[in-house]
Length: 367
Image 1 (cartoon, one colour):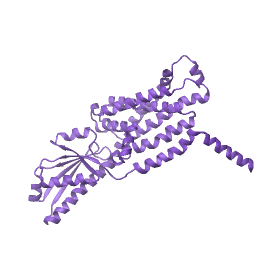
Image 2 (cartoon, one colour):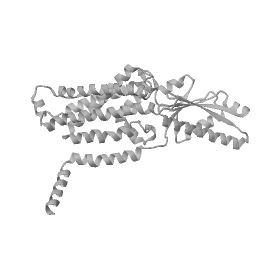
Image 3 (cartoon, rainbow, N blue to C red):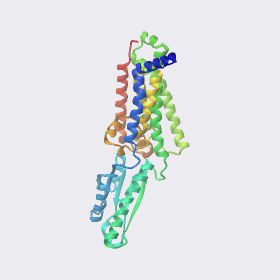
Image 4 (tube, rainbow, N blue to C red):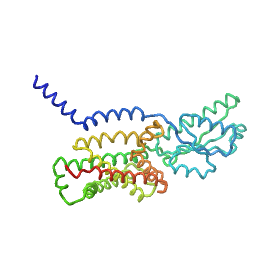
C-alpha cells in the first residue's frame, strides 16, 4: 500500500511541476465557464435600428420612441430617403429598418388603417425572426393602446421584408460561421504541432544546425498547410453551393483572397502556439480546446455580438474568426462589393503580420 501511495504522490508531484499543463487544465475550464455564463444570451439586445419617416407626425414619433425605449433596440440612424436603405445595410451595422408610409397619422385616423414596413437583415435567420417578433410586438402594443384610448378598431399592418435570405434558410448563417470555425481550429492545430513535433523527435537540432534562417523555417512550415487549407476551402465552397444550396452572390475572386488571408492568420496563430509550448499534447490542447470556445461563442457565429456584455464585445475584437465571418457574410451572402469589407480585410492582414513577427521573435535558435 505504501508503494502505491508513493507512486500516487510521485504522479501528483510530476503534474504540479508542469506549470503550463496545469494552467491549461485549470485555466481553460474556468475561462469557458466565464465566457459561457456571460456571453450566451438567447434573447435579443441592442439591435441597431434605422428609421425612415416621411410623415413626422404624432403617431410615428410615438412608435419611434417606443422602439428606442425598448431594451432590444437602439435607434442609430434616421434616413432621409428610401434610396439609403440598401446603403445602410451594406455597412453591416443595422439589423432593422422601420419605414413608415406617407401621411401615416392621417391615414390611421381617417381610414383606421396604416402600414409600416420592417426591413430586416436575414443573413442570420434566428436573429431575424426575433427582430421581426419584437418589432411586431411593439407595433401591436401601440395599436392596442390607441384602441383603448379612442375606442376605434385601428389596424397597423407591418409588412415584413427579409433581405439577403427571404426563405430564412439556416445554412445562410451557418456556412460562413462553420468556415471560420473550421479554418481557425484545423489550421491552428496543424501548424501548432509542426515545430513541437520537431522538438520531440529531435530533428530540430538538425534544422538549427543548418544555414537556413528561422524565417525560412517558419514559412516552410506554413506553405504545405496553406495549400491543404486552400483545397479544404474550395471543397467547402463546392459543398455549400451544390449540396446546401447556399449561393455565392458576391465576387468569388475577393472571397478567395479574403479567405486566404484568414487562413494565413490561423496558420500564424498555430505557429505562435508551437513556439511557446514544448509538447504536442500541450499544442493540441491550446489550439483545440483553447480556441474552440472563443471561436464558437465570441465570433458572432451562433450568438449575436450585440447581445453579449460590453466587456466581452471588446474581447471579440481580438478573435480573428469574428472579422472573417462578418466579411464572408457580406461577400458570399449579401453580395456587396469589396469596398465594404476593407475594414475586416485590413484587420486580418494586421493580425497575420503581428502573429508572424511574434512567432519569429519567440522562435528559439537554441535548444
